Image (cartoon, rainbow, N blue to C red; front, top):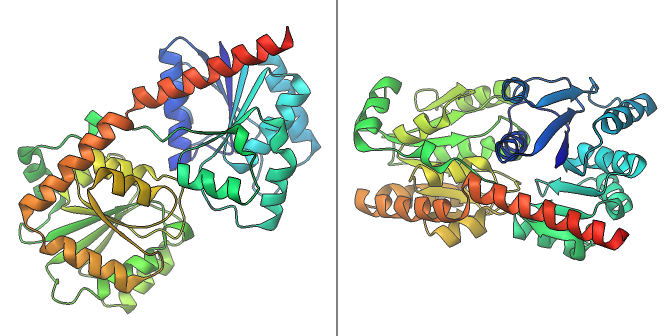
Length: 374
């Protein structure tokens, strides 16, 4: 089976990583996979190419799309002649629907990875083109329900497939943890909070910094934020204004998040909106207790896993209170929470399980379409 993935870009991010991971896993299972990127190929492109997956780029610039881009995409799809086309992220979804219909791809599946469809224009575009997709996949049932209840997506075409992660990669023993804490320079007396995610508006790091500043009596806590993005200068200035320069560290992009998670004591997510962030799944897989805002599929995950506290978004006082409560638990209580989270992720969110769900969905939909055409 030939599958063509269309994605907005391949820069380092959660949705991009999920698509790359899926493409690589399907290739290992015998599929013929190809990737079409709207933006210039960077970030994960090299991983795909090294694994033998062809990457084609339309070399588009953000905010500038024209008829020539559609023509080039149609030519690329026609030359490849896939049986399945899968779009990831809003702009790629639109292109996948148009190109799939023009070329006559048997199965067109699009994927919505976030709840952040606030713009009326985006919501209108989704409603207007949704009929072209055979199915729309969400990575969270709570986000899917929001889209269907708002009339943006036809509920008959909705499927939910969660993000998948390499669970064993995040295993962390005591000896390894001690080694990594020493390497990072963490004082044994410090309680280390870890936050992972790009420095962008959605992650609402000002909320986290405000909460951290309110944690009076917990000055032994430090916060390590891993990620890069256009909010870096604003956030470092906010850190200075709050007097947190000695207690909050920005690590930039971390190639091996499993090491930072292993060295930390707990994970915190302060997002204003999400789909189902990889960072939460990774923290659970690493056996870390979690404090997180109730956005996207996060609350549903943490309640099912039983490994943390959920608070309202954009409420630094509530976030600070939950973080203090986490620190006041015994080490044994936090370890038990971490074990529950890891077991839940292993049983439900492994790369293999998620790839099987995608593979079954693609094959069944293709078979149904072929049967209907007879």
